[in-house]
Length: 328
Image 1 (spheres, rainbow, N blue to C red):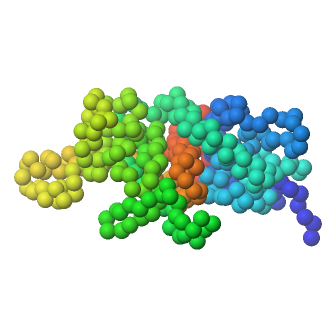
Image 2: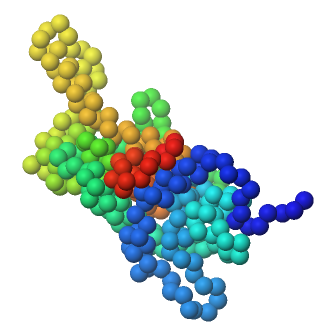
């Protein structure tokens, strides 16, 4: 049987994977991100294997986040999946495919220079320029990300930077991702990573960008406005504890009004759940990939930057005058 050449696809079907990549091709600010990273990238002209283009490696790095691929799995996918090669700009028949070591070195370079935070800032600058971010209010929340609890590894111990946390009557082991979200569009502007044992309220004030006048949180943020790091110019709207709310007598006008106020606050807080849904369901990120908070936090920040683009894609495509990709 005749073998097809590398990079040539014998199908014209528009798969969901291709539709997704076509949409992200249009909305990711590639030029700005490449300009951000290039000063830190290795220069060509040295002896040995020449470095791949920054944009190629950045596209591969983003595909790892979108499709939950390890470095070896990403290398294999570039060989096996024409859509991935096309997106990375490696569809030419003689294009060299980056090895898992090249993919690993690029990720380490991003971590070493703390570029994940700057990637998020660059994405948010684009969104703000398009009028998709407001500065009047922030919603804060946190989610638990599981980590392997097994000690069957080289060091025979759990990751020392991951910790246990109790939610309800169940214990979890891992880290927490704390986020601050614009109250209207629901886009993430601040991300913090901590051990799972750190209380939500401890990180709350660090999740504010400083320009908001109002902030919203669930009942776990009780007392946030009294903490030493609280900004006195911000009005906090924190949910009533569930037990107290259940005890309200809806037949009494005052308590019925309190219940209605809690419903209004809850509808605003609901925006913070959208990035978590994209993170865990769209991108499949439910368990940490690396050891240590630093590496995992960098990945989470990158994922939230990409989730902002995914959530705002329709408005971005409209602003650019592009016809919306089917299924995008």
